[in-house]
Amino acid sequence: MRKDISNTVLKTNDLSIGYKKKNLINCIARGIDFEINKGELTAVIGVNGAGKSTLLKTLSGLIQPIKGEVLINNLKLNNISPEEMAKQVSLVLTEQSISKSLSVMELVALGRQPYTDWLGRLTKTDLKNLMNAIELVNIRSIKNKKCYELSDGQFQKVLIARALAQDTSLIILDEPTTHLDLYHKAYVLKLLQRLTKDTNKAILFATHEINLALQLCDKLLIIREDRVLFGKPSKLIELDAFQDLFPGELIHFDKESSSFKIK
Ligand SMILES: Nc1ncnc2c1ncn2[C@@H]1O[C@H](COP(=O)(O)OP(=O)(O)OP(=O)(O)O)[C@@H](O)[C@H]1O
Image (tube, rainbow, N blue to C red):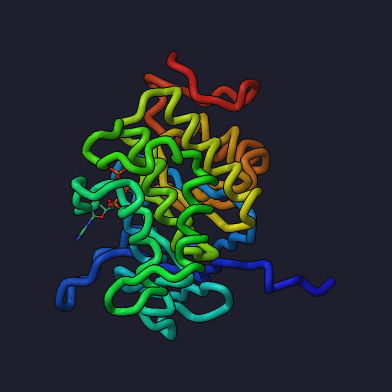
């Protein structure tokens, strides 16, 4: 049966990621092959230093692959101009140098930068996208607040709204639940899950919240020292992909409840 390739938003072929310094290559992970479709929520997981952020930076074009290729909407990443890239992929990083003296509206409006003129004037379409993003994330009641007045959970929602306003088919987030309490971690990930279904966008995020990701994501990408695994949570559990992800003396993966437990 012929596969409908138009549904594929992101695809990698034999990708190796890492850092090059002069002639020295520090390869962090290799053999990364995966594909993300419209309307899918995918988490990247792995221990500290496994290479999650390095992968996200590579996929969004901030650093070059060591080997292999990245395709976004069937276009080779290397052939996409920075201007076009801003219309294909929005990136939400935790440590962003964003001025918190902006209001919520002003920050969300920054998502429209790839479309506005050099004066940053918002057209009717820009305003429509802006308000739509605010509604989707349910932050209308705080839209006139300054960002420094927000809790970490509220600020994360504003960053997600900015990414939605950018109107890209792929949203990439690096650890969107850092600094959040358990309720807000679940809230933000559930919000991402709803957004994939409501907007048909593909959302990819790095996280340490494996128990939540197992419950909420369509697919998981696990960066392990020995190999990179990709698939549906149920398939990965069947493959024992989580059993020895961490040193076994403290926590273990309980297959019955599909979650990690303290020993
Ligand atoms: N700019 C850089 N130059 C060289 N090496 C780097 C750079 N940034 C990260 N590394 C190295 O790449 C490896 C992977 O780091 P990365 O931040 O991608 O891991 P991670 O899975 O996101 O970790 P964490 O869960 O702790 O955030 C680490 O060994 C790190 O030291």
